[in-house]
Image (tube, rainbow, N blue to C red):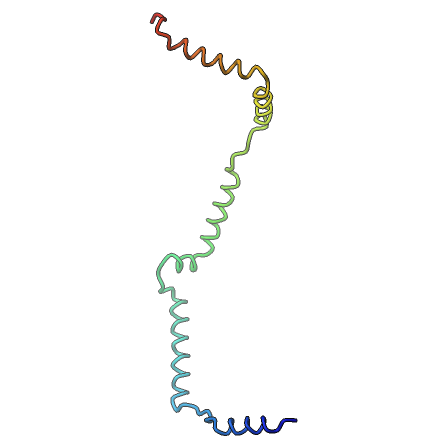
Length: 121
């Protein structure tokens, strides 16, 4: 065992200052206890103002309101009609058919005919 290191440690500990309690320790403890009691009493009386304090005091109303908003959001979500899938399939089939280009040109032809200068009013 290395006693030289232990001797140095004991010498260093011997030079350390011993802890002492302040003469005002009890007064400081009582002051902090009273301060904590005043703060808890103030919170229980509801003297704090603001939205957070109101929600904390009326948490049941806020919880019911939040649930109502959540339920109405779920109920009001638009759902696609079952026929829309059939319409999408028909549109996909039509867009891949060779007749699609002909119909596209036919729409352009009808538009140009409506705006023709040669037509009588």
